[in-house]
Amino acid sequence: MIERHEGRQQIVCDTCPASFAHTYADADFRIMIDDAKAKGWRISQAKTEANPRDTSDLFGKAPTVAGKAKVQPYTHKCPACCAKPQQQGRLT
Image (cartoon, rainbow, N blue to C red; front, side):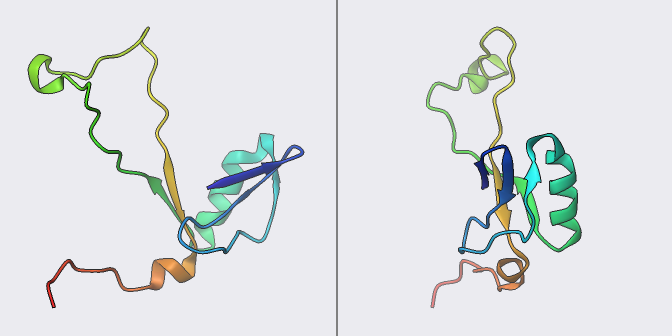
């Protein structure tokens, strides 16, 4: 997640309490993302659950309101959480 306070922002891991070491001004958002990715952070678009009002199966596309695109949430993982092995979904 992105934490904001008094015109400054910082990336915080979504799976542990770690945060990126530097804070950035609101205008430097793209620089902050690029710096975090260069240091091993994984920032990716989150998969969202299906909308119960979605009619794309019937009409070919999801409904829109006044042509505005929906804001896509992102996930933020620190290098330590990225290095952890992922669950494979096997039964034990």
